[in-house]
Length: 280
Image 1 (tube, rainbow, N blue to C red):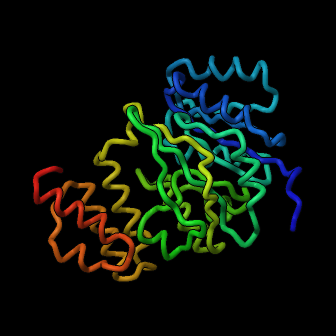
Image 2 (cartoon, rainbow, N blue to C red; image 1 turned 120 degrees about the horizontal axis):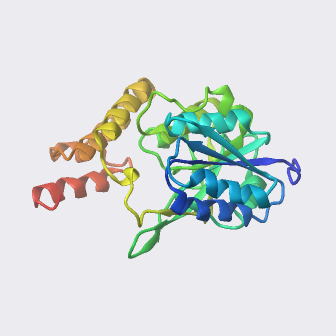
């Protein structure tokens, strides 16, 4: 077993006009039990108090670096900037409104093997009135991911792998994480999911990530067309039903029944029934 206990890990936090939430994300990285960390905050053209906030952290933390786009270029461009500038052998991402639990980096790095494209974990999903976990499998394959993103929004992997597959696709307006995970799985094999939740994903505040905007629908269509050639007929059916769901369109009863035994039948049958009952 390769000893990676001394490997440098770069934590990349991308942010845009969220100074009120960014402190929580930075604090959660500073609280990590793994000692060999570099922190990069990439500011995508914020016009709030983000520069001043990060400046105060930099006065106390030498391992924190601040990168900035003077005008917003989007989350993918910000992530790619951070990856290019990272000095770590490994890279782990964090959204500015989320939070790592203290042993996240330690446990992800400990579980990483070169036969895995990447490692990730289950998350705590935090809503205003409840907290829940989402069941995820311990081994994630390209076949499973072509149905839907079961990985989530963040991983840990080697920096060189993110560069080798071309970084995040800056032409996509949504699904950028999903697209990157698919490309990593296609090139490097399956991924490992740790069963223990090691991250809190907050959905208790209003944000663009919760809205089904035209940009999201357009991006998801573009993502589907980018990867559909590697999909089976059933995988395409699931992706197209998801696109209909995002648009708020009704399904035919035959559509859910065409994907029985894929693990996705009940999700779209429930959606069909809610539409029929007028609850969507």
